[in-house]
Length: 265
Image (tube, rainbow, N blue to C red; front, side, top):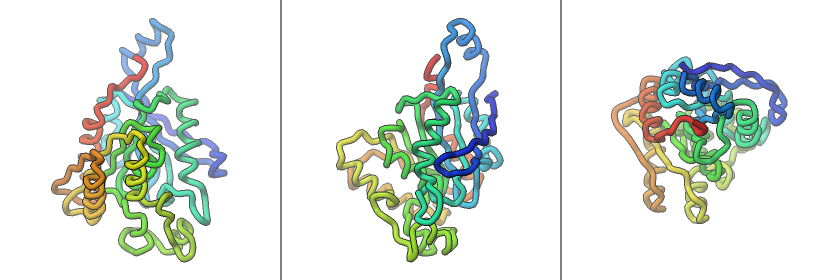
């Protein structure tokens, strides 16, 4: 079974203690490799981002991610990002900087996570799907693949009242009156800019239930990817914006990501 670690550490970027749940594979083959070679094992790692109103406990409480991580022999990192929309807030904390710079560095210095691009992956549901795409498209040099489950990809929908949020939070995120900066916050702008940059784009996957209010977000993102001729897998079918769909989607995503498991064995 995977080793479960609850880690609380002091973030210099956030200027406060913050929580991360981590799953690390552990089996006889890995132990034997360590004993015979004395070489540290490095694992492929999935950064799994939660949605609005959730925290670092969501996937362990509401899905079978521990079993799936063990089956695929991958590390899974689940940070607490609160209702930050994975953003350096206009009036608040720098959550995006924490995620993209400090957290990756902390994880790879402290745990047996590979620091190679081909061994890093990012995914999330709802606000976490938005965060995964923002992270993956802004830092394409860091990830092999990006996946979103029912992502809230239209950032402006937050202050237009089209997704769950509160007005004071939107002002903290995007200013007063709230306004997004497309090249920072807009997934569609990030995808178009990356497609024209000549940089290698990570493999892209999205999925959404047809009964989900977020379905249009996924549809719009897939349409843009097709227009730009950027390969993107879009899986759809019956499902709502709930834990049941999230658990099912996680299994499909992990199969699609096609992990090798151990980067160092």
